[in-house]
Image 1 (cartoon, rainbow, N blue to C red):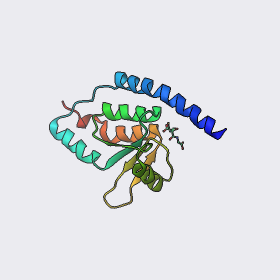
Image 2: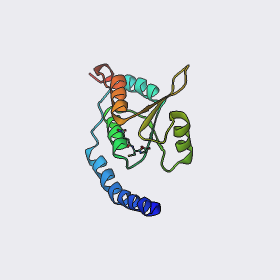
Image 3: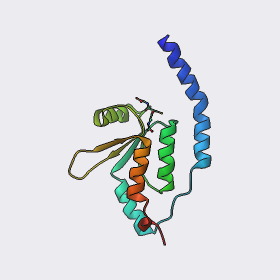
Image 4: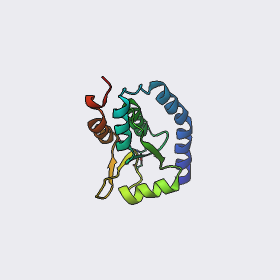
Length: 135
Ligand SMILES: N[C@@H](CCC(=O)N[C@@H](CS)C(=O)NCC(=O)O)C(=O)O
């Protein structure tokens, strides 16, 4: 029975994935524009971030779209297919749930932020303000 359920959900994922990914492509907003200096500053800040995600997870798509809108170069880590990333997420964050934003800090332990709304709010707080945008 368990195996049937697993195959059922795998089938649903197989059908839905291309639809979700196509809709992501079509609805991804254009990035806000920044001066080259401001973008370099943002890029440096983003180097300490990584998004653990599944390619066709709708909550991950929501975060990826916000990342695109804010013009952020954040490394995406596939926690479904890459066992190293999956293990790192479980060990660091405490569970394999996506999306999860890993925020490396300079002196303390990494912060692992779950929940798409919380991640988008964090990104908006740090990178969404007008001062980073080109005049
Ligand atoms: N409320 C969460 C939902 C995230 C969620 O349900 N993610 C699924 C993949 S689409 C997941 O990681 N499930 C595994 C689990 O919950 O353990 C959010 O908005 O981020």
